[in-house]
Each structure stands twice: as C-alpha cells, then as structure tokens.
Amino acid sequence: MIEIFLFERTLSLTMAFKSCARTAGEKIAGGRGPGVIFLLLWTFFAMPAFASTSVTFPESWDLGQAFVVALSSHTSFDEPSVTWQGQAVSLDVEPGREGYVSYALLGSYVRDVRAGEHPLVFDFVQDGRRFRVNCTLGLRMRKYPEEHLKVADKMVNPPKSEAARIKKEAQLATTARRTMTVKRRWTTPPARPVSGIFTSSYGFRRVYNGVPRGYHAGTDFRAAVGTSIRAPFAGTVVLTGHHYYSGKSVYVDSGNGVISLFFHMSEIDVKKGDTVEKGQIVGKSGATGRITGPHLHYGLSLAGQYVDAAPLFETSVTALLKDMKTEIVRP
Picture 1 (cartoon, rainbow, N blue to C red):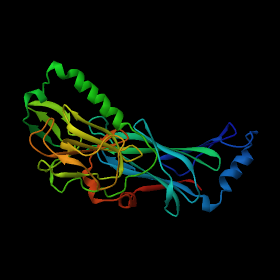
Picture 2 (tube, rainbow, N blue to C red):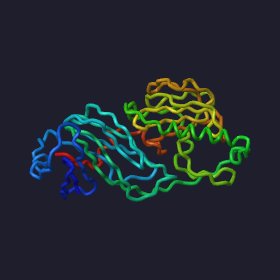
Picture 3 (cartoon, one colour):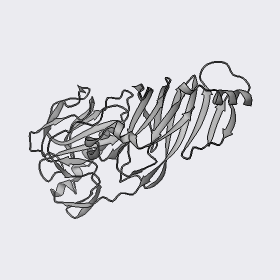
Picture 4 (cartoon, rainbow, N blue to C red):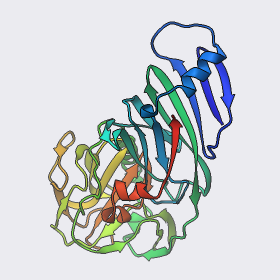
C-alpha cells in the first residue's frame, strides 16, 4: 500500500510492493491549495524516469548479525534517516549508485530483540516534499553456544562499595553508544584491530563461576599485553576510562550510530574529542577489568544495538547489498 499526502488530502493506491509502503507528506516550500486528485495523479505518474528513488534492504536476516540498507536516487535528496528498533539514524548523502546514496549499518542485539517481523522506516526530503517509506524486515532465530568462564569472585559479585561506580560507568557507556552524528566515516571492510585470532565470539551465553550473566556483546581477539590496537573505522573518540567490568576502555564514533568499543586495554593513547583515522593506534591490549587472561574485546554498537562484528572483516557494503531487495519507491 502506498499512501500519498498532498496539500493535507490523502489518496491511497495499492501497488505491487509487498514489504514497503510510501507516504509523501507535507510540502516544504510553496503555497497551499486544494487537494485535487487530478494534480495528485499527475504528480505521481508524470514523474520523469531519471528521478527514480529506491530503498535496498534485506527481507530477512539473522538476530545479532549486521546488515546494510541504502536509500538511493538519480536526483538529490535531503534529511535522510532510517528508523530501526525505535532509534532514528541520521544519514549522510554522498555520490554513488548512479546518483546519490545514503547508507546505514544496522543490526539487532541478540539479548534484547526477538525473532519476527520488525518495522524499518526511511524518511527523506525530495523536490520540496517529505517522504516516508515503511518497510518490514524479518529477523530469524540464530543459535549461539554457551560459554563457562572462571573469573575473580568480585567480578561476579562486586562489593557494595563499587555499586555507585558501576552504575555511573554504565550510564556513561550508554550515552556514548547513543551518539548520533551525520557524517559517515565508517568504510568497509573494517581494519582488524589486532592480528590475533578470535578466542570468543559474539552471542555466547556467558556463565561466570557457574552464574549466568547474559550474552557476550562483542568479539574477543588473542592479544598479548602491550599489543597495539588499531581503529577499524575512522571516527571521533567519545569516551575513555578505566571501568570496573571493561577495564581501560575507548569508544569511537564513526557516524550514523556506528560506535566501536575497545575493552581490557593496558594503555589508552587517545582522549575524548580526538579524531582518529582508520588503522590508527588507539592504545594497547591488556588484562584489565573482568577477564580470564590478556586479550582484546572489540565491540560494535549500531544505533544502540550490539552486533557480531566478525563477519564484517571479510565483506563490504557492496557485497552485503548485492543480494538484497531493492524497491522503487518514487518512479
């Protein structure tokens, strides 16, 4: 179903779009007038072919795994955003795909999101009007294994004296992960932060000292103390600190809700507000916080959703979009 709003009147047209519905909303510039159906139909059907606008997204995807969506057009558009899991993601507009394109890297945190149909909403302004495209994306169940770990008891049952600190650090981390900037500085594939192998994967159900403690929200790399850690994406440092559970930590914003997290470091070589380039050293790996031994925990938060970063090191935006669904939302 496509709903087109023109001059505060509504006309609904049924077309062959199974998973997206388009809404043309308020006119941004110019005067107001009566909602004449003839004018509405002329506006819709007389649109020249070169003005084609489309959205590309997966019809279904696994819980916990990152995916890419795109809004593209032969003509320019403004104020693009995509809303996923209740979070509006501000997008950049750049040359590409035979015109202009906006990309978003999204996903779902296996702990918080359930399998099933979920809304995916694109918004943009074009030719002086606001458009909304309502799509549906199906999230599939994915089985993640269980992992039993032995750590210091204080890392499972922290003393009451640490409660205020832990709460404050959690608030700081949440604020950092909610950072939303428009400029896209993430490019794919990301650079590996260290050369070591994966030692613990995303999504493992963690059991510490026999006590279940939720899901592993990142990827652990083998890294001896003092190993240089490089930024997978360019970006801006939004938080650093020595936190109770994550030890010495760095958070880097790469735009459009893409936030990289580095935990358990021995040294931090950047500070809040620093700009980092892809591959730049941000610190050294260590064994601080809740650990079983030296390693690097790399986390990737997309619009507030922790996702599995590992597959991204072997792919690109182009490859991810190749087999996805593309729908023309404005002929």
